[in-house]
Length: 348
Length: 272
Image (cartoon, rainbow over all chains, first blue to last red; front, side, top):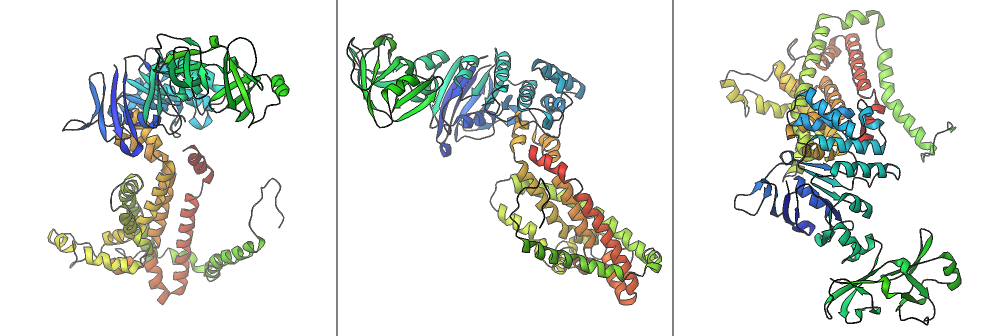
């Protein structure tokens, strides 16, 4: 059952329309305050928009457009919500927490418990069933929360940064679990982590200021970002400008590269390249015709084994030895040099 | 002041301890003064006299009934005040809390003009054959009137602390509002509800002014323990003091019950 959704909420400057194919997982990326959680709250029925409509398959979740507006209560929507924190009911055992969904919809106690046990088993938390939530680690609690959400048998699973509150050891386990349970399931997952998007979602949308600024297949959006946010997520430099025959005109000058598809002169285009493909010089280098962008260094920061040199939108990764040789410091003018073969150019 | 090892720094100046000691004495000294006045030889006969036992029994019965009424009416009020969002909410809260600051005798007069023979509702009730003023029912109503704010304040605070996020999750799992209330909201705020109920019971037990005004002082019908004590004070001071001690003992037990497990309550608050 697919989702069709469109809604506006003026008080939060929110205006989004999206569709989700049956069994598809959609990742929602975007900076804080972009309206990602608002999106999930509206779908779940916890927040009422000014206008819009949403359906799952043939079922209407809300329809505020027609003269007789429909608003289905959260408990009748079949949209289970999994938040950053597990929010397990502290007064119920793990088993009763997971059995909560089935019991709420009228399943007899014994049957609800057996459903719960199945989900506990498939989230690898069966041994915890008699514990109280307070006795679980963060990772265990979140896995139980996944079991609880799935035990409710939702048509659509809404996940609001389910790994954000987990420590570095619990997150990979959770990611594997989600990959397993999200396969073939309609789900929307909010994440800040590009790895989550790549592993879990077929499609991503990027939200900024309550609007969708970018949408498409996960790989496509991350490899060919059109928004600075998506470029930042995938760790790419993104320079936008106007296409010319020999490259594109950017605020740093002409950048040439390998065009992807047809990029006819005059259209808006973007150049994407990895910071590790960029070298930094204090004097213009001689030799092969390469892209040479002149910029003022704004920041230096450690980045893995390398040093990331930032100059506004530009980033270059150089070795600590190179940094020592060049004696770079914020405020210095430098030449950022990159081979044309390392640059991908595409129209936006 | 010597601090115990393993205790963190507290920014309480020493002279505060001196003032706190004065405050503690101010509360405890009158109780001691009363305790030394007790005629211990006659204590048991005094508190087991027929009128005393009748008054104590009436007090316990009416206080239990008014506590039940407070729970029945207080839970919806606290829920509406904590979770609702409607015009006049603040005014409603002010009115619900009014009996806290109102002199009880004024409350009694107000109740009399509501449920009394010539009262707003009393006249219709009288026609229906129901007479409330100067009956045991009046005692319960008077006690409920003054005790209700204690339950509402305590429960509303607990509801606000618990927040609405568990309820939202429960709803997305398919639970109807009534199911959410029964299986999530009320269990989460149970400690707050319990302490509110205990405070209401204690307030009901000590109720005097509104009861005397609205229900009178009829032995076995409306003469609760505080009224009995006040009456005995005129004729038999020893009996009054002995009964006072009984009331103190009941109050101490009630308060001790409500503060019995602060650790358990903290654990609940921490989890929510």
